[in-house]
Image 1 (tube, rainbow, N blue to C red):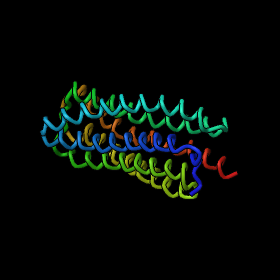
Image 2: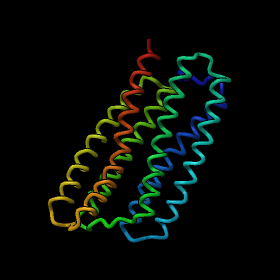
Image 3: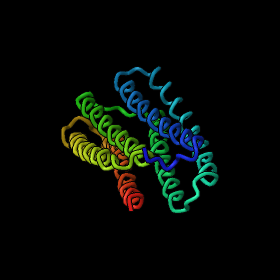
Image 4: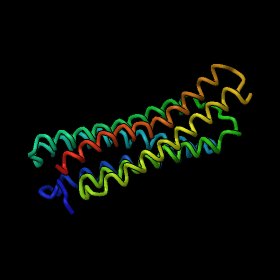
Length: 216
């Protein structure tokens, strides 16, 4: 293992915990959407609360990681790269929390005919973000595996794009939603689900550059 954290067990543990929080928020994100579509409002409400709690925990841990980085990671360039990755990952859980709050308040009505595609889109978006987490773990410990995981980020992001377009086309063209304002509302939520994979791809492009720097 060629870890950049070999001098700090504390820092490594904090990074692992942060990645675990992001991973758990993705799992809850999928659970939230599935429970909502199944009219399981008790589970839906519970996942909303748990996602909000994880977001707060992630913010606190992000600040702890910043302090620990300055204590144990002496190379300024590497420290800046790690801080940038942590901040970008925090953006993902921020997006999940924002979606969760809007979802909880607005409670949009998705026609049953698109439920399956909504679930597929959610899964693809999460798989893209999960592959990103794997690529970041590799960056920290086994840098030669980074590109393998990044290829999966891009694959699932592309699949999510296809599903996003298909769902939006159905919303506007299949006479399943009558009111224009409702169509726009549903499109907004569909876009936000796909935004998770878009953000994962953006971060993966940044990670590619950081990986090249590590290998030089």
